[in-house]
Image 1 (cartoon, rainbow, N blue to C red):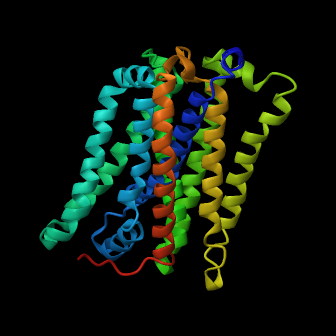
Image 2: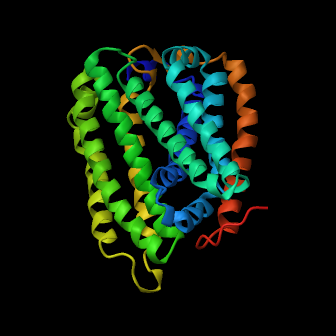
Amino acid sequence: MNEMINHSGDWLPVVFIALMGVAVLAYAILDGYDLGVGILLPMGAQDELQRDTMIASIGPFWDANETWLVLAIGLLLIAFPAAHSLILMHLYIPVAIMLIGLIMRGVAFDFRAKAAVDHKLAWDRTFKIGSLLTTLTQGYMLGQYVMGFDQSLPSLLFCGVSALGVTAAYSYIGAAWLVLKTEGTLQARAVRWARLAGRASLVGVIAVCAINPLVNPGVFDRWFTFPLVMFVLLIPALCFLGFVCNDILLARLPKADDRHSAVPFAIVVGIFTLCFSGIGFSFFPEIVPGQMNIWEAASARESLQFILVGAVIVIPVILLYTAFSYRVFRGKATELHYH
């Protein structure tokens, strides 16, 4: 915290790391659920209509959801170029693999409608594999970031746990989205998926929470220093409560008149927000754990002032069209049509 005190007069890097944090969280929630839907696609020949409905539930949103990833990386590049270079140097290969997964999703989404009928299942499988590839690499990169890009065997094992945990978390929010957007047999199926993915996500969160303070002494000191510990431990406590309450609610869904179908998704959004807050608290003001803080990585003050003007214009526009699109396409997913 000493660095934060010493640089308290230089507020621009703090503003930009906050904007970047909002962009990353928005991406994790919004693109997280459509990646989760892709992971959950059932591949049986008899499941074609359900796959169509699942694709229809994300169709109006999934391209725009990735805007937040572009925004986050753009802010990292122009506001913290030194950190951008260091992070990409270590994560070049997994980033390339993630982009391959995203390309597979984009191609499959369009080609499943244009290909011959007997090839449709192959493109659905491509969409599913692309979703899995994307989430696994994102989880691996998160693990590498937390471990300070260490390449030892224990660190790589932690990255594997992180990859599986992020995949489970995206499946969890994807299933909760389907509970909200679908009905009938598919909604009941989504409820089962959500319960299973939620339990797997809880195991992943517990594993990361247990391992991270052990391998990062600074994180341990920050979380368990009295009297701050009395307040910050509310984050994992509320997170655990969210998992338990959601599991109890899901066991009672679906209800008559579709009551409470939106609650599981809202709870998962809350869990994502709490987990992200925990990561932020663990490392702020470091932007590269153990190597660089936000003031060391920041662009020149004049550059940040210029960029802030653009951010003040662009980010509200993104928020407005995102809110508008979700308002227009609210309600249950309808039969899939391509134009």
